[in-house]
Image 1 (cartoon, rainbow, N blue to C red):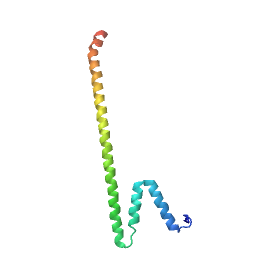
Image 2: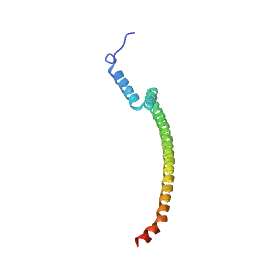
Image 3: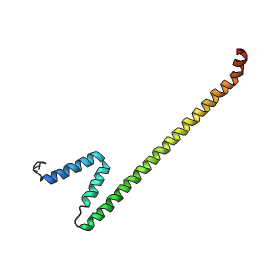
Length: 112
């Protein structure tokens, strides 16, 4: 098993591997997926460019859908948390308001 170092590889292939590694490192699964899509769709003729564009936009829209659903989940969780906080806040406010209104006349009467 003789190891081939990056230095021995042709320059272009080394660059390609580096870019792929970077993409995978940067984007994790998404980067790997995008790299896979690009690798599958190396244009061999004029028509392939259009096919690549379509496939890449399809992959992008898939990622966008994932992102949107994730945002929706987060928003729903935030909304529920907000409702809980609001309920607690209102009940506390009403409690203190009622105590204040109950004691207020005595204060006024004693002050005069």
